[in-house]
Image (cartoon, rainbow, N blue to C red; front, side, top):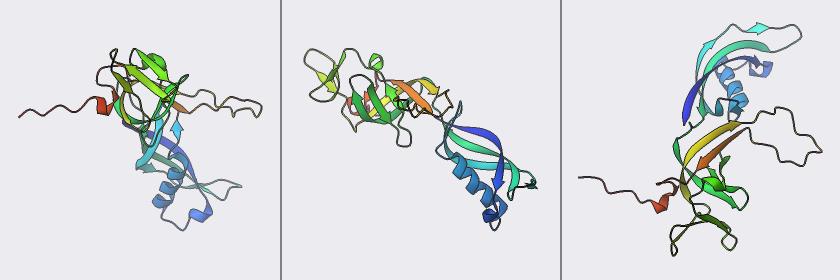
Length: 198
């Protein structure tokens, strides 16, 4: 679920940062630039792990900033396909299926095709219902924890800003497609933990 990514970047330290120790100033700039941002093909940046190397500060003509080459590692959230995770159901709609959150990331989508079969959307309950037998139903109630399997991790390819005339909602920078159709998946409360062997 979490990986370390090695990044090299040219960091610009403005004069307001000069009073700080160099490493502290670099860490502040890196945190502001990368934290909670999606890097294409790498994932969502969760934390700065460490700084590997710092180059010599350079001054460029016409710029008051110090320009410093820095190599560092970031903790990235990018689950692999097939990974089993637990998230909270935050939305349920007839056309889009379920949407889940893991707290710091909420672009996890379960389309109708990846729900247990047979499943139907209940307009009375405003949620999806798994018809286990003719008499037994299980509800995908909101704000409940659900276990899911990652089926795809996609990154937005369009880097152009949306047009003001466009009525389409902006696409998330990273989107996870998930399934809850396999045995052991779905609401955690459906699958009580087994007793431990003596």
